[in-house]
Amino acid sequence: MHRRKFIQNLLLSAGAFSLFPLANLEAQRPSFCGAEHFPYQLPPLKYGLVNFEPFLDFLSLEVHYYQIHKNYARQLNEVLEHLGLQDLSIEQILKSRVLEGKIAEYAVLKNAAGGYYNHCMFWDTITPFSNPVPSRWRDIISLHFGSWDLFEQQFFERAHNWVGSGWIWLVKQSTGNLIITCTHDEDNPLMPFVPEQGIPVLGIDLWEHSYYSHFLDQRNKYITVIWNYIDWQNVLSRYGQVFSYT
Image (cartoon, rainbow, N blue to C red; front, side, top):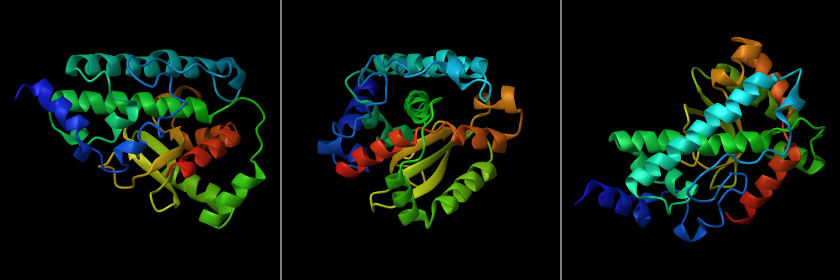
């Protein structure tokens, strides 16, 4: 069988998806991404990057958005076109076991799709504007972690102890539990081969390109600062959307 046709059949088969039934894939499509299908593009920002100054520097954010994220979108479009998989949604790609393959195209597809999706969530998770934590969200967090303070402590410890590049997530598992987890490089909890799976409701970039020019190797300072820029109302809304279709 032709390699391209083999990959298409594998990705589109019901057995390629491990977390959620195919009937739910459309409902689970993230509204925060710049495009729902090929060609993928940068998501429009709801704020100016300069508004994060002086606590997050404009130059780092500009490079992060206009170069790094844009490059992931370009790579994703190129590999999908090469493989003839333009009809797949970003979730169908991320949830497919074909990403475990050792062929070069699989690795490119996994990295590009993960990088594109992860950064879409990142930009949708932060805001430079005042955004107090909704009381309902504090109650939900307290139900899962014991208290808001314990949640913060666990989140900061997990981010601090993570070695290497990656992401830290707040994830809703299929059991309904909320957990804090980390993934390597551009992997994310939607992928069926990561140790802790589920649907992300919050994602923070732990790659050095996110913080090094401003914080050097002090990742803790970066996490402390960006914590104050999380759009908790958006996170609560995303949790509500996830809860409604799982």
